[in-house]
Length: 164
Image 1 (spheres, one colour):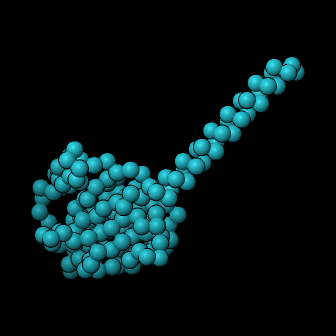
Image 2 (cartoon, rainbow, N blue to C red; image 1 turned 45 degrees about the vertical axis):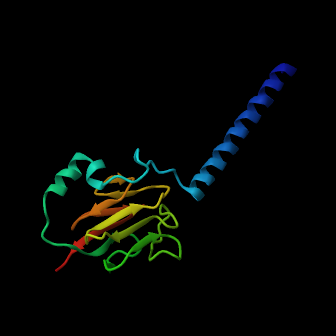
Image 3 (cartoon, rainbow, N blue to C red; image 1 turned 135 degrees about the vertical axis):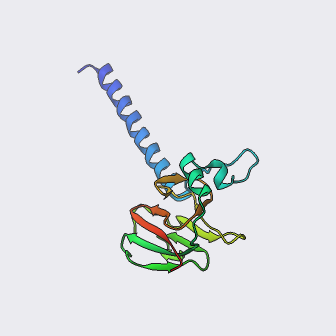
């Protein structure tokens, strides 16, 4: 092999090595600090009805008689557990979370379920790496929860249940 070809191969090898290192650093940074959250033009999170999908708007038009009362875990390591919706619930892998789930795809503090001033319940993704899903839709802002709504965090699926 000529010296020129060996020099080109060395430079190409170094370029690939540096690209890999930068990619690994970016993945670690994203995992630690999370993704940036898109905000509305006025700098605040929009209302759920104004920014949701058409299917969600249609569902909001129907009024359900039952109010959310519990959060039932359907799949995951705590399947079958039913948590009363009384106070704010922080869901994640970290020990400081209200509901600790052993899920490799969940962030330390992944999502928060809280009650609004009007008595309605909402879920918010806390800038997690893998996102929070309500009824199969990835949410990026405060989203209203109704009875029978499905919340998925990683591989853990939870369903909002109404009063019995």
